[in-house]
Image 1 (cartoon, one colour):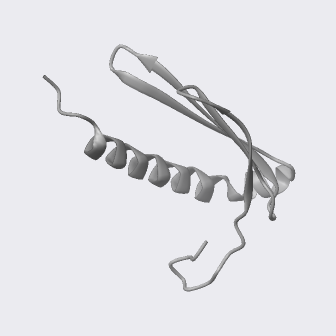
Image 2 (tube, rainbow, N blue to C red):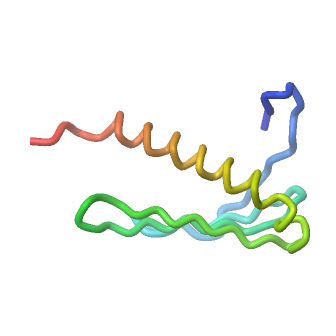
Length: 91
C-alpha cells in the first residue's frame, strides 16, 4: 500500500472465506495481524454491510481505534460510491 505520506506499507492478505453475496473474510499476513470479516445482508432499502476486524494484539487495536474507524468509514464511503456508479438505472 502506498500512503499519502509517500511511504510504502506492506499490505498482504489471504482470503479465508468467500461466500457470494454474503461474506468475505481475510487474514492480514503482515503486521499488524488481524482477521477481517465483511458481511452483506440484503434488506428492504439496499444492503447492510458489516465490517468486523479482530486483531492479534488487543493493545494495538485499542490504540489505533480512532484511526481505524475513520479509515474504515472512508473505505466504506468509497465502496458506496463505486457501487452506486455501477448500479443499473432504476425503472
